[in-house]
Image 1 (cartoon, rainbow, N blue to C red):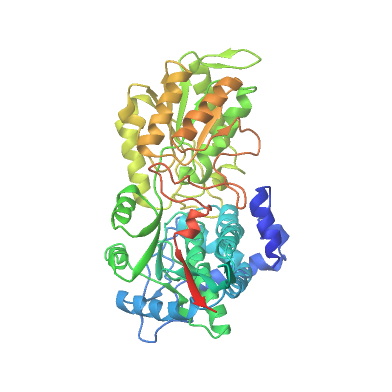
Image 2 (tube, rainbow, N blue to C red; image 1 turned 135 degrees about the vertical axis):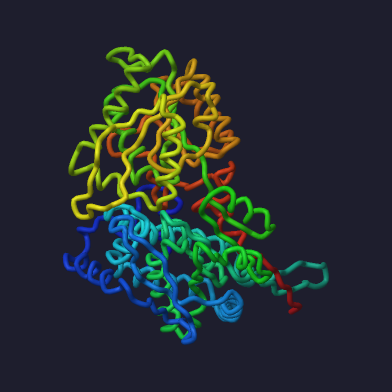
Length: 543
């Protein structure tokens, strides 16, 4: 691996990838092999290299497509044993040089890449993502994020020299000291995964812990274990091949009814916590006073002021709000349109015409038999379906339901829900100023674009936002939106049409979550995401 090339890419922030996101770039036989491996895992015990022979096995994953349990059971280890193993392995792992750790972790990514197709099926049948999204997000994109983390860490961990000879002239003699600089890892890290992106959101924190010399315990969501279990299996194999403890990284299994996350998080030996999920538990993690890195919920907004082509904008929005049924942390939820409508070079569209255009574009996508099912994927769990149904019922007077039934040709029982649009007036903030995870879109009528921006800015400050999308042909207003939204630590994407979608964040280029508003306190990947995991120590020796 060419580390200088990775560092160059990290600095330039241009398009760069190491792991190809196109399934067709891989040998033709690998997809069939991946499916076979997935099918063979069903209704079996998933063994890991570090498994204790006395382990009980447990699993409760259900495929959103097949609507049946996967029947895969994972080794279940008690909290005390997990922590003891992590502490013991930490004492070995921390003593390796940065280069040794980098090379070993890079080897794990290469081994994992051989199982991208199995990971894709595992993700598809735990999260409900489409096959293509599952392949890209859980495989190449997750591994590129890990590589980005490692690259950022490598620069930071080698910022100071290992040692120097320090000389100060004292007149008649020189005072000479040898000085050493050591990045000292903090200890055991806990990485808490989510059910919708079981590797993409987990891998950055995991590799950040490991490259900085910490050991790690991964606590996935009990409904989405399989994808990250593959990562951990391959990592443990590589560690053992290098005569290192497999327990440098461990899998912590629990159940929805009997979770162990708090036990782990509150354990004195857990020094670092990475968390992805809802605000309630995320706020609890932050309240523990430990070094933590969180990605929580936020309300992502769209300001639609003016544009070159309203049809192109409507089509782009239709895909963005429908992708993975709105179950992405970057998915837009609220679309703000002035009551005066939207200006284009062709003509001025009224507010209702714009609503109709967006609605028609979403309906057109849903009526496309080749595009609808792969775009929507499946709803990860029944609770999301129930929440959406209740929200639609309580806003039935202004709900626009598409009355289009989307079916998955391969899985007739797939848990699919077409998007619903709810219209609201700006003053009805109780309707739309909360995150509504899933296929639900709010179109909010405002007095003017200034009110749209004001609401969006205050929403990001109060409720958090990971993304903001704005359409305007007025450069002065564009600068105003950028300035005000950046002031509440929210990035803005402007005038996206065609193949550019606000949902997508690229490794080695896009910063994911600003860390400056209530949607989370950490960023993939800035230097703070790395540097808070270790402490610089300087020692001095008299020569």
